[in-house]
Length: 386
Image 1 (tube, one colour):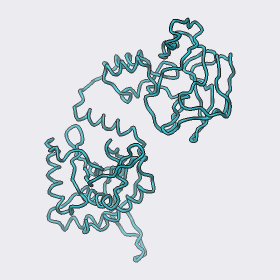
Image 2 (tube, helix red, strand yellow; image 1 turned 30 degrees about the horizontal axis):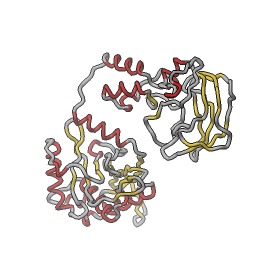
Image 3 (cartoon, helix red, strand yellow; image 1 turned 120 degrees about the horizontal axis):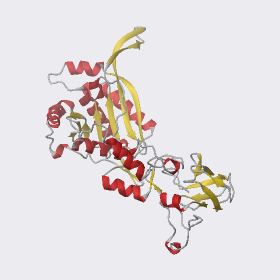
Image 4 (cartoon, one colour; image 1 turned 60 degrees about the horizontal axis):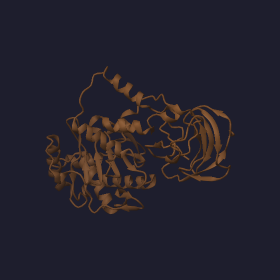
């Protein structure tokens, strides 16, 4: 029984379309199973003949249970990384029947994934060893079309892919780019989601005009997020096992574009410091980040990030939280739009920006994320209180 989803421990047999002795092809559904999430097929890794079926209809079996045996050629068995158990290691395998289940294991997990998922999702021990030798991750090879059973990527496919790369122009990735890639790859192992809504920013812009030292939109958003999380820190908690670990301090980072990447300076206890007092520290950290001279005290251990992608003219985006964070708040470019005014009985122009909140869906659901976003919008409408 394959792993059919992150939270699925067993599945029920609902259909057995073949019987013992039937010849089958590679990647063919031989057993249909049902979980609490979906119905899907268990597929064959190679062609052969069904030697034995060990399951019964309407019975449930745990992940890892042996469902049956397939008579396969010794060549296919070797290619798939299947070997006889130590007890029968000396026994002939001319018929191809293994006395132990396949040792191929999925290297990626997530929400329900069909059992016949191919490509780089399943790798032989030989393939894993070669990738470790080259320092590659499965995400690096996502574009390879596999020639193995069920579309699996073989070592030969990998070597051919690497050989053909030499035909293209290549540049060395900077240490920062490699670090960002690693962080995003680790972040993407979680189920991430994004909610968004428009926010009128006229009040914020008018408040900014009146200040001698003018905060940027990102700092307004950061302060609003910090206050909202100071009122309720649960949305910024991290799921560890069966517990949500709340932050001890509302330390919020903000994205600064630097050469060949992005740095995230951190403002500590941002919920306790007024906007006017945060501004000089914010400006200082922006300059230090651009110069790649951030002190250790201003790096890491933050609970959320604010990113102003509106500076690039973008009105909407779905940024990814850092691996150690649950949340990232994004602010888009402001633009004039018509808004209905009940008192005037007509449309009036307002400046509106898109506000997005990307989050770890294991910790937060859409409703909780929407309420947090609504509170941030409310705070941005009263900038004098920030």
